[in-house]
Image (tube, rainbow, N blue to C red):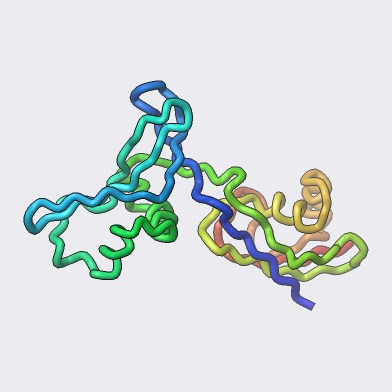
Length: 182
């Protein structure tokens, strides 16, 4: 029987960027946007606060864009400070590259395994789905979901008892399946 696990974000990730006031490396976003219109052009920023000193920084989302080219539903979401839109913006590689930021997903996600206990089962077939593009080590997910240590999972991979079509070393942010044989 195929078990379904889901990696779910619990909050917005920290933004890794140097603060120009206190030299801290992390900012926290609350999901608030600043929208500024100048005649027919619009600028949009996602606001983030330094975790050390509270200084505000603006992450550029739209810059000098014609108002008519912005979808009305997107404009409504920007004005409503939609937290779901903030998560989408932070996941956008173009926005991350433009603002020279990275994301820190530590403590911003959880693994839903459906509440099953997998310690007594000999063979487990698992499909892992990501609700958002969260880079996580598959070894960590398998260890957390099955109640094993990461070192034990590494030994099982080397012994060929954990099998997957994807490489289990490194980080993944896309769906994958694996089979665990004890």
